[in-house]
Amino acid sequence: DAEITQSPRHKITETGRQVTLACHQTWNHNNMFWYRQDLGHGLRLIHYSYGVQDTNKGEVSDGYSVSRSNTEDLPLTLESAASSQTSVYFCASSESGRETEAFFGQGTRLTVV
Amino acid sequence: DAKTTQPTSMDCAEGRAANLPCNHSTISGNEYVYWYRQIHSQGPQYIIHGLKNNETNEMASLIITEDRKSSTLILPHATLRDTAVYYCIVRRNSGNTPLVFGKGTRLSVIA
Image 1: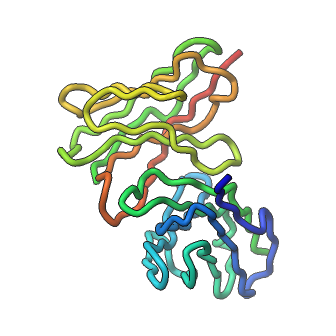
Image 2: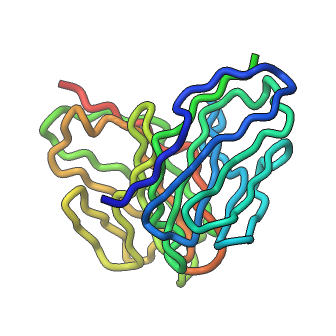
């Protein structure tokens, strides 16, 4: 069955380190999204992509970057991790033209100490 | 995209119908109503969507008022596994903007 997977599921890192969270989907969806979820803020959009070589900033993109070199993957990089980036991160994908019927991964819990 | 208003929390007895309301008074003619839910520690899950007609699938029913300013998600026989945060989202079915989540309604199904 097609799926979307995130790795790692849990990570602890130190302030200032570069961290990359992986997202891989096997639906061949063009659209991919990264969200973060914090208590009191709900799900907030970080970055998204509508296809290979396409990336767009979301509501809370500062300190994050993404690259889309193929259809299946959209890795999220924290250039210099900060304690404020401690959060649960969710990746999602959807078909072109049907952006709102999205499928979400199980999340990555990131702790920055 | 139109904004939505949902109650912060609701309780429902196990086996009874759970009716989750959503107000979207500024909805436009080309905007759909979508519902997602998020069970604790999991990613959000698509439930159902509709434009103006009532919709039903294996998970739930969606009732949209004639003026489309509000809707209700119905879980016909709630179980403990339906305890989750339910999000009502209004947006165009096509276009290049992602899902925008509000705070949702926390539904607690009680045995």
